[in-house]
View (tube, one colour):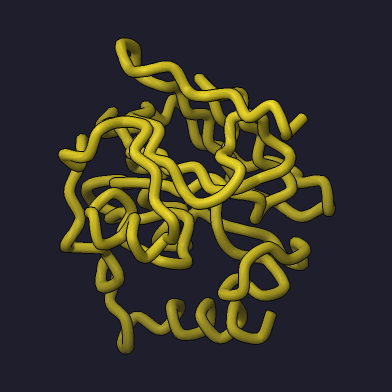
Length: 189
């Protein structure tokens, strides 16, 4: 949690980091010129192919252009993966946001640049690339590795109360039509 508190404190000092200074400027909206359902062994490989640039962060985007891509995995207890639709949890407030899944220990806000980027996508209506990683709780997740599952529209962004009792940023996403069907992982529930 110390890293998250430090990040928040630094971000509040606009003399150090003016608004928009953390926008991801090397991203691109829309299709990555990689076929839908392409699989990758690692997040690094996914990044190198231009599907989802960050190798740890779940949201990639700009507060002005919106989100370019998200990675859905088992990091947040409040995510709900229905295949064609998602309820996706924003970033921040976890015990250790740099080491994978951890318990929610603080509120999230739309002030976080990544959360603001995904919220901006509601306004821009530009589709967001969705990558799924392994998640035993989702029958749509690959058993291992990462899979590019196509383009989704962010329909809404809102604050909610998470299972752990903290405020969380939530997003409703819907898959665009005319894409190959998402494979079902029968080993997951």
